[in-house]
Amino acid sequence: MTAAGTRPRVVLVGPMGAGKTTVAGLLAERWGVPAADTDRAIEAAQGRTISDIFVDEGEAFFRALEHDAVAAALASHPGVLALGGGAVLDPDTRAALRGHRVVFLQVGLSDAVKRVGLGTARPLLLGNVRGRIKALLDERLPVYRAVAGDVVDTDGRTPQDVAAEVAALVEAAEEGAVDG
Image (tube, rainbow, N blue to C red; front, side, top):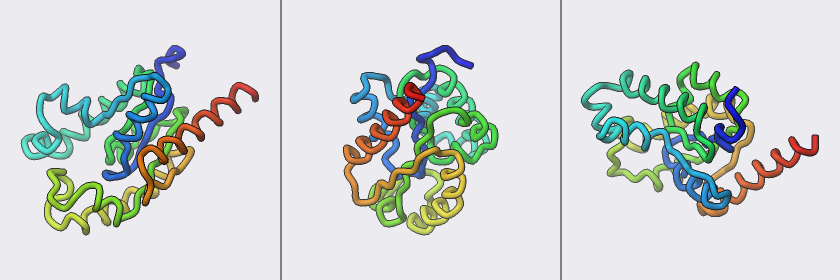
């Protein structure tokens, strides 16, 4: 068990386009804690984009980096943590998430496509962007639901509204833990 204050207050999971990074920043600002995004941490550590990592080294190499980045952040990040969309596919990562407050930011196909854009540089979306996003949503939805204690729908909502709902859920759970 990590020392108090060295675990994320909340971990945000969900597909690309759900707004995890944006909502993490808003929550961190609200609570006066740092925000972290495992994709950005990997890019900073590698000195290159995730797209470049995929092209140069392949998905398996990236997923190993991702697993290590998530494990390190879960053990030491004291704020709000946003995971990359595919991080929850790793069984060891799913196991590591147990005992953490995890919120699934759910997004539908239409909103995800609008947010990600059709001219995207995301490596898993090469080719038919809309079709790939749909396939990823269909494949990953049960996994996101399985790891999350709460689900917040992001469709048609501003990041501020989503962050306010996540904050209310986290704060109510923390209050309940203190009272109980």
